[in-house]
Length: 69
Image 1 (cartoon, rainbow, N blue to C red):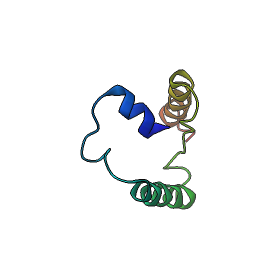
Image 2 (tube, rainbow, N blue to C red):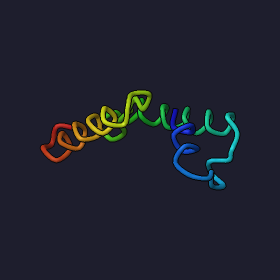
Image 3 (tube, one colour):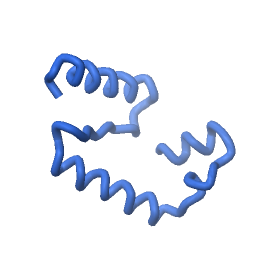
Image 4 (cartoon, rainbow, N blue to C red):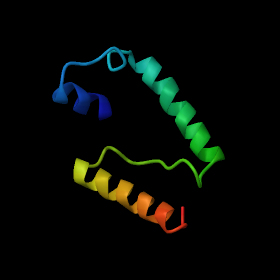
């Protein structure tokens, strides 16, 4: 989803031109870190529309600002 959004936004840069295997490895490492540090690293479901993604981010930041996350 993220890669498709990036392609629709502009010409892919060097990073965005990487293959699916690369992005799968990066994603898995982030998921591993999030599992080890759930209070520090949050997972956002970016398959939703951009407004919903923004709402998820805002809710997480609100929790951080108020000491709840």
